[in-house]
Length: 384
Image (cartoon, rainbow, N blue to C red):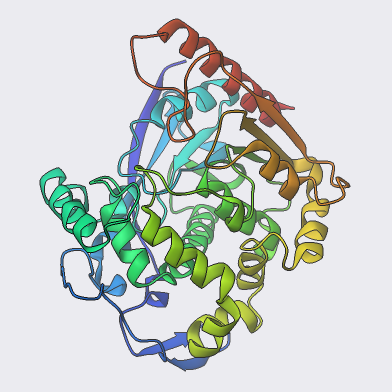
């Protein structure tokens, strides 16, 4: 099958939920909200090129998304949204994944970036020289830090200073995807039929967002959507995200402290966060339920049961970031009474969560065979 990549502009209309201003408005409730949480940078340092106010990052508001499509099929009735992992800067790893899904299903595959990731992050955050320098400074400031690298220093500094960014950027991306679906439904993209059907393929943290979208089921848009999770599916507190490619240990501790250990107290201090998490926003309630395995478990598991026939997870045995058994615990429930198929695979070679199919000449035939096997299972799930 001949395939091609096309690109379209997008403006996030939900960017104004982000930190960086004093006055907010909830459109749903026609409610004016006052920011009661202070905007933070790291103690003892100000790097304006990293600690930019979120609401002012134009790359995150205006960007292009890509579609991988069959060359001779101009208007799609079948679409698959591909959601990527945490702290990603370019789509190189994912293009073969998207091409394979496109070829195996005949669907158009939409590559949509999470807020402040991929093309939605300032290019400066990917400058090797500047990020190396920041990482070295960070190691001096925190002598016991683990896995601070030029690859993760920008996102680690930002989440260390303001862990609530994890929620705000997640909610922004949630609303962006709904906005994109509604743009497709209104005929704004010439390659997508207004009556299109869609599914989701989500990897790593992309699966966390995918579950919130699926379980919230805004306006029943997601009622018929199949969701395939690859190396994903747990609640937030069952990730192990300290990695030279994901987060350093200081950022991870701050994030865990904020989202898991003291979240209820922080909600009392932040009027805007409290509104979106606790006050008549189902997406916020589901987000809350996906943070801590122990909390809101019955609520979360009841939602998963509703969609058990439409969810399929592929896990990898040697995945130390999002382990198989934690994915099973979340998706199949504490009492294993949710009939979501979770299939654990293993490869007879070295691999990591961050790079399951490394682009290397060593073991290239074996890697290619593993890749084809995984994506045949993915396509079979969508085609069933």
